[in-house]
Image 1 (cartoon, one colour):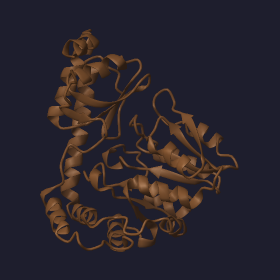
Image 2 (cartoon, one colour):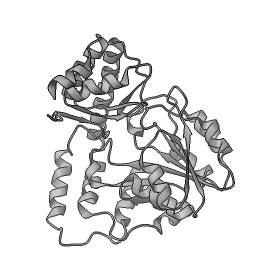
Image 3 (cartoon, helix red, strand yellow):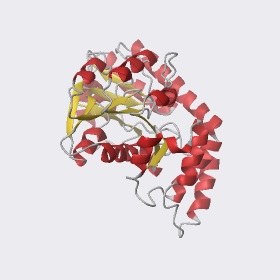
Length: 344
């Protein structure tokens, strides 16, 4: 029989629902659902710009960060161009690339899960139009440091746009974390991509934004779908900005749980590298097939990439304890495949 999913840890979602103040704002917006939202999200753009400390003409808002990414590709890519990215990464990037008629150029990760910046630079030929960096990286949680990012940007050809996906930046605590908005003045070909789906817990509402030069942002905005950001999502984002301190405390809790979970998994004999995202990455030399079977047997849904690894979202304390209980059997030499068969 099918084993029920007790803990959803596969999509890097926040374990927390929207704050009460955010839910209240959403309910008020629902009461006005007979009215259209703004044709373009100009007021929301201004509020995000003020929150980020940049001018509004440096902000593009879209339907999740993936929506802004698509608008960027539509703005700068011509049919037959190439888009380079490290692989494995966010599944949407090859899909978006083919949607705009471009050729994906996946570049393998380094053995330690970091993006191979030298190899990415090497594929940026005359056909290249976009190179994607995911920082912190999805799914490995690795980090491109400030110095490494600056060196990379200096070497990118001017005709190539750098899409810097910072969907998980709020979970990073490294002292050498890049200050990417500060780079925008010197990098007209850089778009910093962020989202309210992860740290701010609004995944279902689909709001993301990009920070870039006024010229690049203007080109992206021309691809914006009219009425594309609904009023409930707008109200939720605005209320979340007002509750920024409270939401950051939630993020701190997730980070603390991430470190606790990693420490406990190391204690079980697994080889978990440090993560700067809201997830952990299990890969060789750990027995990922056995780990995947053990998690499934105990009702934990993680993102399993056969032959590559497992991305394990950091959830609530109860969910994380369930992970530890499931994987303790692997560490002690139990046979999770047999356990799974016994339950089916």
